[in-house]
Picture (spheres, rainbow, N blue to C red):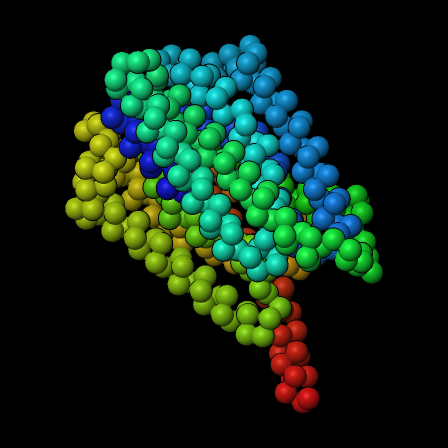
Length: 429
């Protein structure tokens, strides 16, 4: 899934005014859409952890439908009313050239939230019952749909049949991809629901609205608070030196880093699903360290070797004036993939133990550091906004990881002890 942003940039960079449309998509349309979908991002973890019986499945599914509806209403209000003028013009204070392209991109992304809520909820069911291969197939469906739509739109523009802005090409591709994936996952999960959930009795302690809220609210606040940082970064960079180059390059840097963080993002659900099995604690911890070192190592190579010219220049065809910004931005972000893998290890431990409040605490620490740093930089920064903002994000992420490690320490020890007890009982038999 992370590859879709670099693919989008590859198309946009070969169309008219790439700098404007990269900035409009990454810093306005995509950033705002991410914040709107924030409350439902953790449906994947919730579904994986909770949907073990028919009653719980139906209750979590009801939450998915209701939240999808109201968040889509919010998207309509922001994208199609004067609220957008206030958000983009006053709150984010974006440069004038990207103002209207950003509005267009956000309008085209309207299906985004509902499609992702539906898809993530059902993906959690597939992961819980060890059918994650279908999740990968769904991702392939998404990728094929995205590339097909973008290729068609770009060809129409190139042949002169219609004038299609780069931001519209990207947003149409992304929307088509998430819709196609949601449809496929909804079809693929039917057998699992019928065989493993329908007719299953509720647990001894059935899921209630109160217990679900206590579990999910801290979990949902984590991505919501984190995603607020993206538009906050847009607002801050718009008030720092070299704002247009920073906003355009930020979209490129974010996409590269996201690809290498994607394994870390996915690892959270792996930990939740597998913890409790014999040998799981040591194996999962070892893999988290391996994932951290590998992904950050690749990012380091990309920023300090000729791979940078190959990727940013030849593959994505980034304008020359943005090349140095992208290379330096990637170098500053080199620790992000590593701490993402560790955060998912510690976070998965806490979700498994149902201590989700600790995750919210860690995110709150990150957000506090980031907002204070961005506020100070907007007033005082003398270096390009991209460099300053990225440094702030990395600092906040390091402290977030340290906090999670401290709060998960007791749960890790308990999980290891429980694992040892199970092994001893099994051996004695």
